[in-house]
Structure formats: C-alpha cells, structure tokens
Image (cartoon, rainbow, N blue to C red; front, side, top):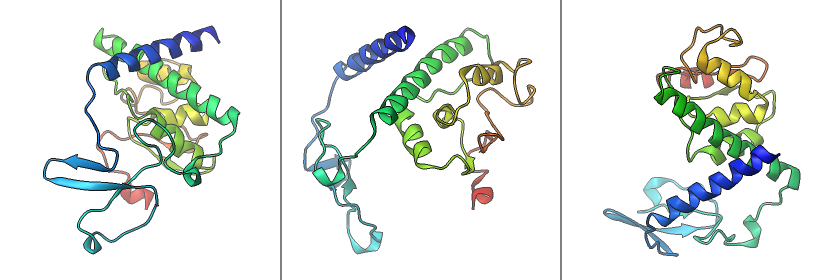
Length: 196
C-alpha cells in the first residue's frame, strides 16, 4: 500500500507540474480550432455529418471537472473506482520505469501509455472477460485490468525465460490467450479485418 501511496503522490506532483506549465483559456461554451468553431453538448446523439455544418463536442464534465448535468453523473461503486485508479497509477509507474530502462539500453523498445490510462480502463471495464480484444501497443492498461501481472508484462518486455511468448515478440507486443487478448501487431490496423 505504501508503494501505491508514493506512486500516487508522484503522479499528482507530475500532473500539477504539467498543469502549471501553462494553461490556455478555454471557452465554456465553444471550442475554437484553427478555422473552426463548435459547441459543446451533454446530450449524446448520433448525427449524420451532412446534416450539420459542425457536430458538437459531447462532454460529461465542464472545465472544472464538475458534471454538466445530473443525468450524466456516473454511479460507480467505490471498489470499482479504487481498482480503476490503482490500475491507472500502476500503469503510469510501470511506463516510467520501463521507458527509463529502454533509454538506458536494457530493453530494445518500449511504448508508453501516458495520457491514455483512463481510456484503457474505461473501455476494458465495459467488456466481459470472455470478449476478445485486438489491441495495439499503447493499450497495456487493458491487460492490467484483466489480470496480467506486472511480472508477466516485464518478462515480455525483457524476452526472458518467464515470457509466455518465449521471446518471439518485440517488447510491448503483449498477448494472452487466457485473458482473450490477441497478440499485438506492430503495424496499426492490421487486425481490423480480423476484428470484423
């Protein structure tokens, strides 16, 4: 528990430093992109692009992190929230250590998951354990959520005797038959036809 607390404190410190580097004023009602302006909406609707000039950006939270409507506030169990948070912090910590290992020449290749942790956990938690996943190399959080251990992930990155793929894959090309996660492929979108 102490290690998680230290990792959490470091993560909060890092996030605080990032936010202090400079924030851009964001309009509460409009998002401005070069050449485009669009509105926000809290009503999720499927729209055909040809029906509207600009499709509004769906959001659940305002810029302060407060739900924009009581209708969209999630009702999540405390155990789920704690597991999700711990998994995100664990993934972030593993990324930092493994990225530094790659930079030191201890492993040949490593792709971080920085900034994508919540996407992994949110999507993985919505799936059943029996659902087959065709992931890409920046989705290690899905495997952590499903139960792959840190030791198994690190064994794969180092291609050592504990690697379930027996060293036949590049680092971060995880796969697990038991967790219904197809082995990752380097070129993106190669598994789209299989997934259909």
